[in-house]
Image (cartoon, rainbow, N blue to C red; front, top):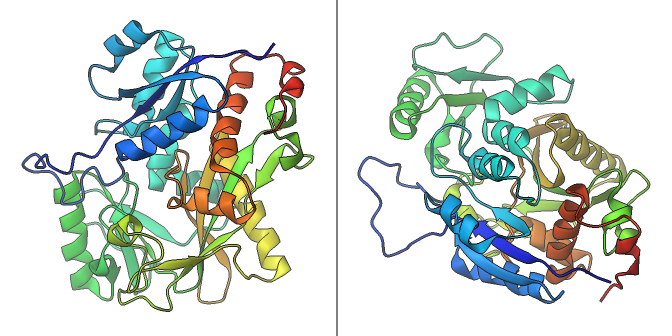
Length: 362
């Protein structure tokens, strides 16, 4: 018999009417979700007979979890600030022994730290652009870093701290922008070689035993992973500098004057194979679980370089990159959400491997 669970959908919600606290960056809370996204996730889960509620991932979360007593949590929580904030809710759920979806504490902590992620990838011989972290702002620029350069906060997501001034053409611009990032975001600045080529994002779903727990085992290749169609950013109609800013990420896609997209992207077979391989290895080398989305950009010679990985990719229907990739290959939103759930449930021992085989694909 198929089990029905009490599921708590956890997330941080943008409050458009609430003024930002004094002293926070202008794009603070940019990676928080809307209540409409939480409602969409809940509705998708309920199509399979589960009971859901939304719980704010705020300081009351431990008490509200105790009241609701969920069987499993669908985690979309960004955290409340500080170091490795996306690992805060997973750490709490681990301590309370409550199952939850997607990556666990370590991977969520690593992925938000872009410098640490790049160091791991570099040490595992994955291609990244030359980079340097600035902690105080007056560090000597490394010899291999030639202008133009690119700078962003080392521990933020959703394009935070990225605008037209993120591209640096000389020493004065470097020092001014690095000081701005360090002072405004209260964290190190990551400076790297600017990559002028095409930009892609590649979604990964699954793990080696995914076929045993998925409602859609045919999605997965022999290694247990599903590679979504590659999405490419279309900058041909952009009125902005060729960078994926927080503002661009917040707009409806596509919109006149902003970045649009191609999905599936038109790429030659060799490049497509390489992009998919890099995304999977990027996922595995930081111990990501079940779902991730990796951004990759080409350098001046057309070689792909890993930019960053998102272990909590957005799941806004018809908008988030991963949802657009799923739609491009005919995967319904409800099926995507439920597969993320069932992969987690299998990992936490909530279902037997053969039990999942009795669930029919809708």
